[in-house]
Image 1 (cartoon, rainbow, N blue to C red):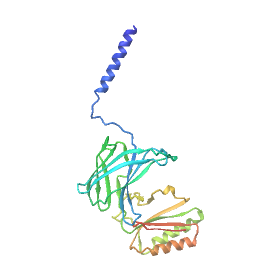
Image 2: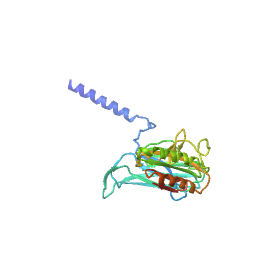
Image 3: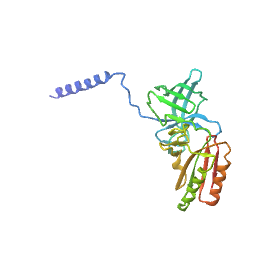
Image 4: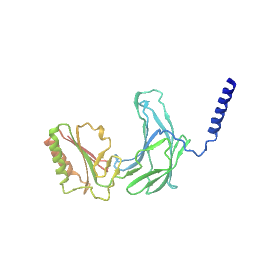
Length: 272
């Protein structure tokens, strides 16, 4: 009796092992995502510089982990290959839970279509394309094994774009904040971006525009203010003194206001 049971078990094991060996090699393996990939155009120097922001999805146990990568670019052949080699554990761990992030500077890319491969340790190869136009970068991957693309389209910020926010913590300052926005948009040099073909709904790196062209600031949740009114508009020149004067007047009249402006040339102005 026991021999019959043992023989049956062995036959079952052999059957399942045989099935496993006969699994078709073309089956796609579901690989857990390890890294976020995002596009960004840094304007802090006054000249836009395209880059890839790479970060781990999971938090690491040290604050000073590093991502080791190789970037091969051949602009002539329009070929770009990013290889993520390893997550380097530090010798002296600074304890703390956080994701690991690195910035990958990219070369200047003329408007064209480029092959763009993202590899993990040369074991996983994700093939795709990067399309560069006058107003956007568009990344399309055929596969995304081990990676997650955060935004596949990055719009370039149009010339003479001004954006920012009015912040205040005291509720009685709400009227002053609203008055500033009204006075700002009534300037003859300031124009709404609504129905302007230079602007698209989507991601611009420093901000996003929703379907109604409302502004969502990058890292808006980290701004230390109970109340926040974002704004965006087009200015008709590089001379921004009129909006500076408008902000200073509002801040001088109400010390509870903080007003911050940004421009696509990397200019920043704050009054409080």
